[in-house]
Length: 352
Image (cartoon, rainbow, N blue to C red; front, side, top):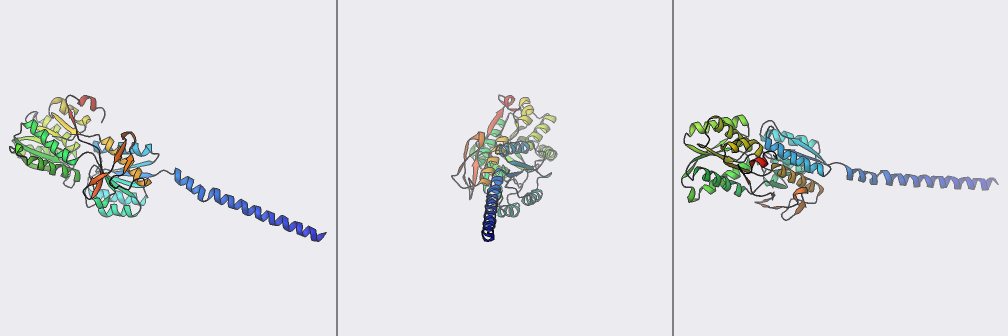
């Protein structure tokens, strides 16, 4: 009897151990790899954007579009911009974002080359890097989001000022910083357009730099007017610069005497276009530029694109976008600059 009882107890103990092992195995499946994978799938990605500097309405609109796109994907947007438009300030922000282990960094570069070590460090850490508006060099990014064809921008601005001044006289350019890649490319195309014999009576006397700071842009405009009393036109391919120049020309009563065009926000330029200080100016929608960049960052982080020529991806409300060649790098092109004048400025000034 004792023998049978001992055998029975042994069998109960064995079954208990097996049940316990089975229970532990189930817990591992539910709360281990399977559970972590579920959490990873629902975890928000962090996508950061660094603009050139604070206090720039154009940059604020661009970051607004970026944030909208990122949040539409259920992710978190981190918006950053230094007080001054310097590469050093942006480098510090890049280092901070690397330590935060963000999934991507989108940057409007203050210098095409100085940012390379920091951005390569970010890429080596597994962070996807792209530029927008003002490109960094191709070794520092996966892809660039370009607001419009640089050649069309440069040539269009010369064609515009030529029409305004009757194809004759001195003109000047009021740019952002001397290191701004987008500005410099546009200016190069302006100079190439001026090589056409039909512009033989137009003289580009100076390229001035307001550093995308309102006060400095005002001072540079005043200096141009003082140094070149026969100046007939100013091209400001920067939203801060063109608004500052518009104010100076208005305050000095130079409407019609010195023509003004460039790239401006409709909301800031409406009063100058309505008054005739600027007959017309150009731009694209900076909200759209940021919006496309937000979807590009998300697609890069998910691995659905690598930034290679021919790749396509969905960009929300703006539809499908394709990656094209950009020298030895790649880019996404939004389109030609749009002309704003007295006929359409009222309908756009409340948009952006």
